[in-house]
Length: 427
Image (cartoon, rainbow, N blue to C red; front, side, top):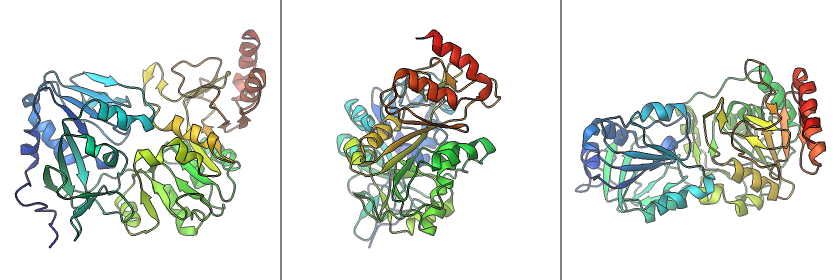
């Protein structure tokens, strides 16, 4: 008989508080992120308080999805993150956050290279064969599990098993913690008129039979919504949201023309609401894969017609993009942006789209700028198409001067004269 969620492995099942007591000073602890963050173990971490000392936590947390519950009483604890954002700084009030800029494809090796003593992960309940699954979050666990020391798995009865996803034998974790709580739910961003105009311009660059990847920001999701009249699209990405469901149900996304993973909708993780999670679990065409597959540039390059649909905060007249800082503050990280842009550029017939509004939300600042105000997330040799509500700039082959002119043409009209003056001064 398969073990149940309430008693996954008699004799090796412990409660969450006992699991956290296994963490000793000086240890490095990996914590799974995204929808797979083990929340019962997170609550136990928060309750441990001063009992936690000099622990180094490392986690690929997702902005807008994950916080981290360590307070100032956890003396000497440190946290390494590959994104830096307001919610994380709020939840880790003790300080000690180390933000490490990294391509998403490199994070698993960086984590394993830190020498992980304890891994805190979440799995779906075991099947009759004793196999658990990574469920809706396959991104990092398969790539680092065998490079960790002590593995503590929260087995959440609410995490659905995905037929075409990584499996973990029930006897692989050293300890299991039984849990049964609803997965976090996230509302998709509401469309707005500017996003809709950007989406129309970007959608014109997507052809029947293309394979799409999209970021989970407001504008990339709006671009996906605008693709309902396409045929035979494929899907391959790191994180998906409910905006894909109408396109899959209508047949606009079916994967029939994909050059690999044909007829499969490939992702590393999913976020949405319970209805979306249930729908994915009952849909045999979903394939959940680790980052070593979803973000690998060779895999991406083998997908003909890969269109990477992503966003940035600002683009300068050199054709460089900053997708990480705003107003002088780090608000995100590069994530998988560079991986997908470079993969799309390598793909036969591929295209990389950077979509952004032409101004700040208050209309006071141009998003097309003479020089970036923050780090260069995408260098000018990586850039392909830049899309605003005013049009599309193709930066793939133009000279420095031609690139600048193309970008000025899609800037907000009230800023174009100043940008032209700046461009002339930079010659």
